[in-house]
Image (cartoon, rainbow, N blue to C red; front, top):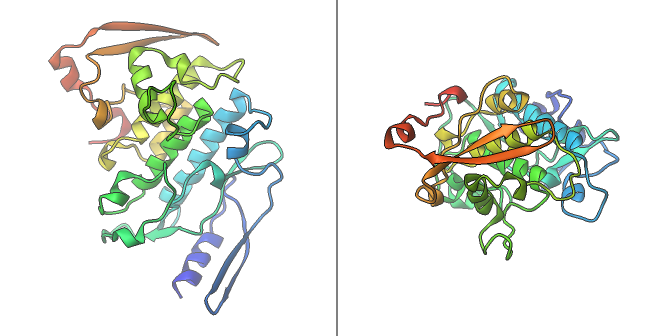
Length: 287
């Protein structure tokens, strides 16, 4: 019964950036969902393989389209639909590289008043994209999808897995190393080297949004609606606070001058305690 209810809800969703559900099977213990076929396959094939790389315009449009699709699920459906498994493998591309969020097999319907806790046995999702609250056995909300999206957004910019560890990253996970590089003002180190041209303003905007999304505390993460606005440039993006592991990693702030295709980086003097205290997410609609 629960499966059929979820199918009914999913089938009622209609958005440019969501894969269309064609049909389903529910016979005995067998469950099957059938989605439309998209010729270009999934995003991971373009980011992490030797396949022809996507240019920046395509990447940014994919990032924005994916955000819009998730925002629709969270904020525009009758019940909040939490995808639970946002990752490049579940972002499909049509013939013109329009992003379509797919694979709702792990989807969870969340009534706004539903604050039940899930056990560790109920964990849904994929390594590298799971929000901390899954492992901490905390209440699961739409902010879990925001965290996963932040990891995907960083991968779209960098062309590397967020959990990748290498000599270049000094033995750290790429997502953690990337924040340290941002702190140093070395934005170019984060960007995929295969990109020949990129709009520097959009690149920095995407990087900042990704760091907001992967904050450890759910309340610090923006809603997907705010994510869309930040990517579109509708609202300003404040400097994201350092994720917990980097709270004392840097005493200086990074200033960036944006030109059409060039990123000029400068490091400002260390901030005072008063300036640090003013750092907040008020423009994100957060408390």
